[in-house]
Amino acid sequence: GIQTNPDYRFFALSAQFPEFSNKDKTLVIQYSVKHEQKLDCGGGYIKLLSGDIDQKTFSGETNYSIMFGPDICGYSTKKVHAILTHDGKNHLIKKDITCETDQLTHVYTFIIRPDSTYSVLIDNKEKESGSLYSDWSILPPRQIKDPDAKKPEDWDDKEYIPDPEDKKPEVMFKDFFVINVIYLNICMHKLNFYRMCL
Image 1 (cartoon, helix red, strand yellow):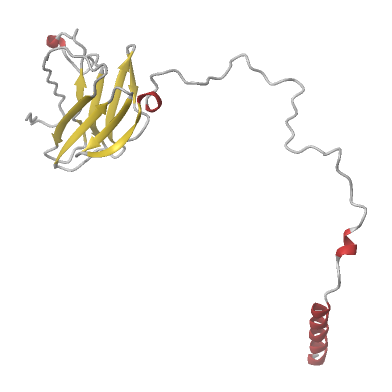
Image 2 (cartoon, rainbow, N blue to C red; image 1 turned 90 degrees about the vertical axis):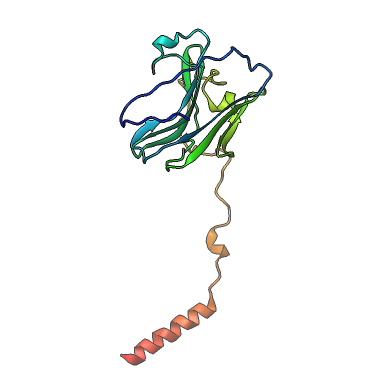
């Protein structure tokens, strides 16, 4: 494993390996992370770079194809990054995946399948899965607003409009009411009781 000692420092390590293609194959990125102490701010992510990188000038600004792994900063950021690069632009996953924050060893796994689906696992338990098309903003949206669309001048904004077919009923509602004799008797009884008390 690799261990860093001083606090509040940036570390980067790169290793070259033979070029490969995951076309029609499943790509699995998996590694373990152990924070020796409770982190205030720090990341333990891995970047998969393209083959045209000069390792002598490798830095945090170096372009990458995939960035994956935990990132912790204060109380607000405790997430797993899953960033894909397309046409020179980094696309963050739209879903929030919470990372582990204790001092134990945890295995982080990012699986990208040929059918454009993915899974993110922590300690071999799936935390998120879905489609590369819907969970990243790589493709343009299926629907966009038409900048030339305008509301017609005769558009009616009223929520309710009168019904021209609506007519008042011929029979008035009073015809439907009947005197409740039981209620009337109770009221009369109470009225007589109050008179006796006076």
